[in-house]
Amino acid sequence: MGRPLPLAAPSALSSEQTGSYSSTLLPNLDLAQFPTTPVIEDEKCLPWAVSAIRGATVSVMRLEVPSRARGEFEKACGNFKKNRLADAERHVRNAIETFPNYVAAWVMLGQVLEARQRLEDAGRACQHALSIDATYLPPYLCLAEISVLHQQWDAVLKLTGVAIGVNPVGDAYAYFFRAMAYYRIQNLAAAEKAALETAEIDREHNEVRVYLLLGQIYEAEGNSDAAAVQIRHFLKLSTNRQESKVAKQFLTELEGQQVPQ
Image 1: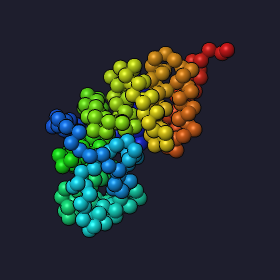
Image 2: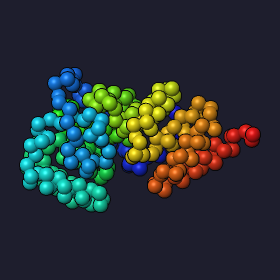
Image 3: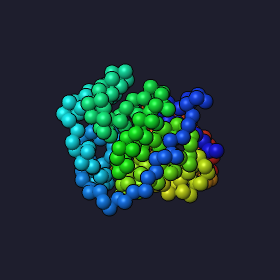
Image 4: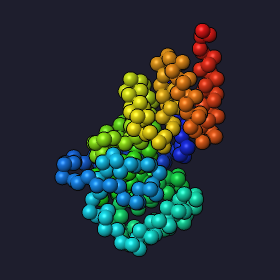
């Protein structure tokens, strides 16, 4: 199974919370019919740094959000960042009530519900976002993240595969979730390739856990020296105390495996 990757997101799931969100989420897309335009401001409120440079598509619907709905969305964003989850949910639901096709608001609702550990509802919210606009990258990332929490690795691979097709240049988070899934099903070569792709895309280090994951992959491949290099790099970048504590313990174990020169 491999050494589990520590996640900042909630991970303790009851049997009632387990489920799959991939069965109806993978439409056949003709991507050539959708224009490539810069990402609009709403994406700054979502937890993934989706760069405009990477060719995210924007539908006309997403450009026609009424100001009242956008105002409620911005209030939800502020409350979400302050961990005021009840207020965030209230405002984002107001945004959706004002403009039911507000796709970013549906994804925000999914993220708020995930933070409140209402994973079934979170999955439905992000699935609804995808039904509104199948060219929009964040719903795929939302659903992949929820599938990671459920340890549904086949679903993660399906969702991220479509996400990479939606955003042809590639998104670091899609590759990161993909690397995690490959690692957990013990396809180490594919895991390493996807993790290195993540690191190559993510020049701003928005997802530093990729270096922790690379360390785990290299350890599983029997290369403790390369693993230690990645864990040291992770520790230089990480601001998460819990994950850093785990990484330090892991590094101590790796250093104990190394043969003195």
